[in-house]
Image 1 (cartoon, rainbow, N blue to C red):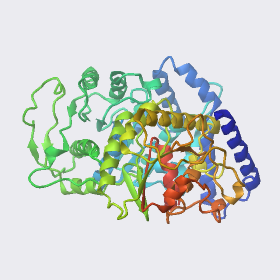
Image 2: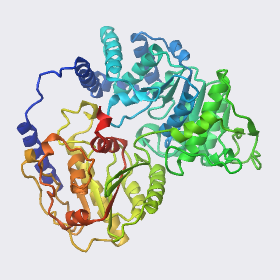
Image 3: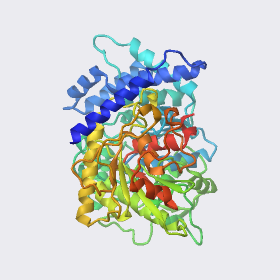
Image 4: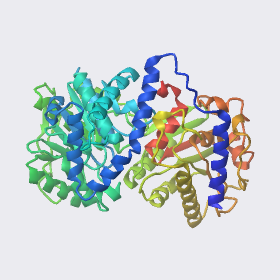
Length: 588
């Protein structure tokens, strides 16, 4: 039944694609925009570069070869590894919160009048978000300029010995280094992609300071299946004589980090909790919601202060205590505690003014409230659940008490989806909606969010499996089922041109299940909102569509509810697709 349903959806999608016509060859009037789209399409070809895949097979037995290859690509692009020393880099790794810690750090240092570069991944809506100058994504014009500069140099230096091009993430990393050097940033905050030791960002020789955010289980096929193995990978970014800071960690992975630091002569320090910086009646206000952000903020304070000190800037913060009471070396204190200090005004403002879309973000759109967080590991989902339950609790309750809670979820890679979904049960969702990370049924016109490494069929199969897992978890929990069953026994596929929804049929589950699968984010949002989100911008093909395309009891409840609260989580790529539709300005 699952296979039949997916084949039916694929057939409907092909029909929609054929009906809408192929992409016109006419270029937009503005040449820079055309150049940008051409750059993105060319960049996307590096996702499936055949020679790169062969290279990966060769390198798999020797991970160090990956760094050697990266150095070769950098040199072919016109840079030497030594050139990166000019960038005054802050290098940050971790499993959970490394992007948020980077965002806090960048915002603090920008407040000192410094010109900042920030390289992060993945992007939410547009690729150029990955490379930022002074907190702003690279403009389309500059992205196009540097893309073609680097691409042509690499293409023109291909020969029999070096016949390949760098893959997607490697290319963007090299491009970021070019951007930061040419745009003359005072510093660059560089977030590790995956792991640390053999990540392509680790060609950096002499960062100013390094950071490790919270550790956990993720990317097990690459990094290892225990947190100790993952800690070994993360500690690979430590460099001789370069101070490094880590947040509170479980004892065993902390000891691994300590040993890795000692091996290379790296002074490693444990960050005090943020409470230690809140003297008297002062409470530090954070721009990012959730109690878990406090450890990321504490790490950012240490990284920014150390960077300022090592680069000769006045940090403007007096030490409060070199060692906190009770901080004698013990099992947890096998790593010395970093000193606490009085944060400067710039630091306080930086923590307060930090913005990092897609992480513990709340959007109030009329009766629909969106809670958006790209959590995708067990520890980050746990933090997300705590944040969502508290945030929803703080919202004003509808006078008539009619509130509907919806989960919109997807997960990718080798993650244990069942474990993630089980953690979400305490949120008491009325509906669970699953869909791939595709914004539309056809992504041909949205090059920024194309992913050639995932097929529609595989993505839908994963969604159906997630739905079956959720149904089983709900049955084990004993409900709750809604009193009126959803009538979703067949595939809903009226004329796609008129904007009707496509709904994947149920897969061996009771008809009173409260979970649904849609083939794209747009269709999922249409059903969830029932036309009640005044900010939801649907594609042109959806204009004039029937406002309530799924005539079911679930749709009726959503139409009549005084409040709809939607948690979007499980994947940053899913979050990006949702934000693209909810806030069209992010695509401009």
